[in-house]
Length: 216
Image (cartoon, rainbow, N blue to C red; front, top):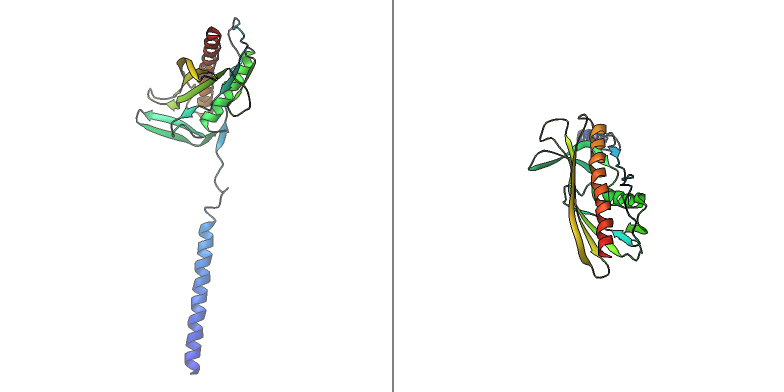
């Protein structure tokens, strides 16, 4: 009987040691996936347009700007790139400060404000009684390597100006710009995005103000 008790105790002790060893190994493995262990992504933002034609005429109406629609691949804070026409990829550890459509909406609003040519402009979510609604679609918003490196930043926005409250489309247009980065580095690529989007924003603001003025 004494020998059986000793053997049973020895087995239980061995199992306990094995269990602690496995637990320790499991905890050691967990330390490799704890959030915050990998470097955070670099965040980038773009700027609104602030220069417009000196002969830009003012309007006496108010505008609401919808959040642009976008495909699932572009409706993201990640910075997109394309090396061929059929595949969308993203730069590693690099993000915009917001989802691309949200960021572009804010820049559209700020660009209208910077024009000093409109009574009021705001997001569709604000309680603003607007004369017109601007609906947009973000169709292109990626760096393209089709012609080698450095890439071109490609931005395309389709816009519709809608008369309120009838919700009648009075004008539609597409604005597109490409700008080649000075180098295949993230800072220069973001600068190329800023230049391309700046061209689109300027043309969009001027077009919308002219279209609303002609419809008045």
